[in-house]
Length: 430
Image 1: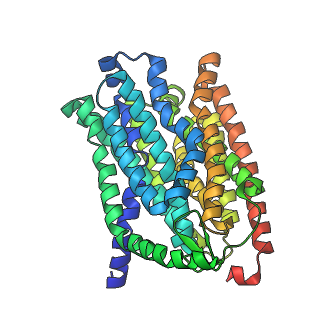
Image 2: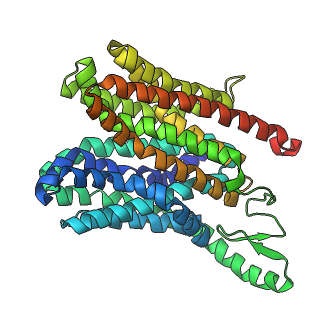
Image 3: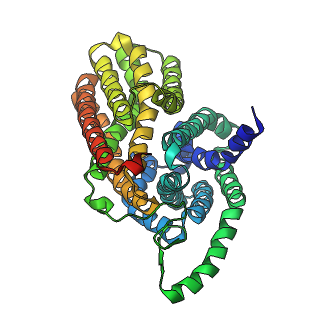
């Protein structure tokens, strides 16, 4: 590795650490939920609500999170939110039931801020490498999920549930410190810009961008001219991407919650074998996003084509599970590669069509509010259908329907993306 590449890799460490923490607090609770129930006296409904709180926070509080990012800037937002995630994990681990729920709300709200801040950051710093950076984000998040899922139960067995869960706060506190230190130069530059801006405001030739500083003479920090145009709320592709995310999220969260039970009851696997299969499914969610930049180097491959292929992968996965239970391994291979990569593509589409980081934040707000609201329904819907009918056939048929809608929405988003690119001036394509 050359010195330049080594420096580039090192510069990614703060970004990776911030992304790594996103799902750790939520996933770490799952394997030890029964222990927490027994120690705190929670019933099944309350325990289920506890695990659902973070996703509900993503859906409900994303508009608020977007305003926070706009008010204090991406750099400060990521630092503060990472600290808040860590504090939420600690609060959740104190023991009393009220702090269990209060901590879950705090960490869920903080992660909602990070979810908005990261695509905004990618738009500003890495716009021409958005697919790679969004892939690194998804892969890092999935690594954190896999790590916490594997280690959480042994930690709780060794340390007790309170300390065993609280120890995960270290990942968020570390991310906050490393990120804050790594962005010192940016904060110093921003402080200097305030002094210059004070003089320029007297002349009346400066406007604020509402994100992380100022825009002088209509030119943003990255040298991009801030263009006028419809807001994110009036952009059809933002809503289509939100619905695409909702269908993808329903498939993903349903599989995450019910896959072990499904494989045991429908395909005849043992509990241990089903657990290994779930680990493989999650691990493929790490590989899929990182393969996307490689695929884009192939002649004729475009973002629109990849979106179509990946959403079709979800459909193939669900159809195989419904019609050919013995082909569960093929279903998991296809679905595993699709699940992480599809999320990466959805976020990248949002970055691609954004005029600037302010517009990107608006698009991500629409996308994630709609997406997480739909995603939260996945486990409840499939579990309810399974309990009502007493078999997996109808539940899987519902997922086939959801995946079919996902393909249709993916095709629509791809068509809108192509129309967007055709409408751009030639200079914007360069």
